[in-house]
Amino acid sequence: NPALSENQWARKMVEQVQAQWIKVQPRTGEFSTDLEDFIYSQDTPTLSSGTYLQYRLFKAAAERGIPLLFDGQAADGLFGGHQFHYYAYWKDLRRLGQWQELRQDWKRFGGFTAALKYSVSNSLKYNYLSRMPFGVKTRFYEYYYQELNYLNRDFWQSYKSRLQEPAPAKTNSLNQMLYQGFYKGTMPFLLKCVDRASNYFGVESAMPFAEDRKLYEYVHSIPGIYKIHAGHRKWLLKEAYRQQLPPAIYNRSDKMALLSPNNQWLRELRPVLRPYFEALDGQIIDKHRLLKDFDAFFNPKSDLENYRIYKFAAFALWRHVFGL
Image 1 (tube, rainbow, N blue to C red):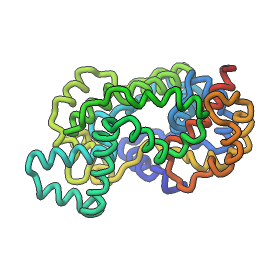
Image 2: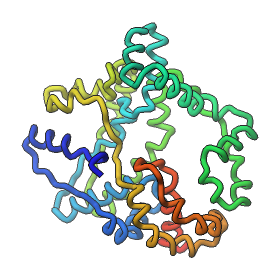
Image 3: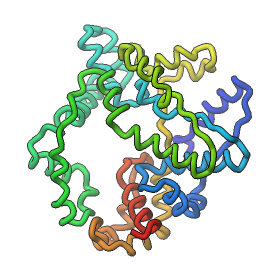
């Protein structure tokens, strides 16, 4: 899917530094062949099929005799590279009274209405949902996350009490959001994924943004106002490398995560995935209900991964691979 490709930007960087460009472009058939080995290499179910891209990257490095790969993992979480970081950044602008910059940022985001809706939804997600009464929170999850309907009801009833776990501190600034995400979010799990992929293929990985303690502690001490600026996320990092970056990349204001054609893969792999669900014991996933709706469930309408549907496939594969 060209919309998910960043080849044009990679090409500019390769030309800038005169590097050798090694492309790894997994296809559906290759993903199908690698499914079980990929899950085995990770030890646990993965959160996203994007981890398969890392698996293939380290595999390619091993095949070419490349002993070490540098990985930019944690840069987004350290410097404010995700779109949802705007929500906390706008709080900083309001607190500092930078109203003109706030209005301009909202305009760049799509206008006041779009920015307001985004702020309200993120405020609900990060500050209020976890503090709702248990009954209200449960009903909200069951309504909003329709995938929960495919869990075994006894399993859901037994474990939904985990929604009552202590709420995290309210997100009142960008630095606070970055700090919580870096130490208490999914970052440790993502670092584990890179570590498993590198060790599985015998290739060393270096993740300076996550491993250099002096660096990340120093960056956490810098005011958040310098990490997003004029519609540019990770602005501080871009400024630090301004002389090394091609102008087109330096001036680029959009960015993507490590995207895979996840939804396309799920659609095309439905016949491959179905036997893994047929073999489940039904204690965690209501396999009869899921198998009844299987073709529709694994046929997402959007091309963008929602990071929920894939987890069902990863779980079923994991149970099979490890004989659980």
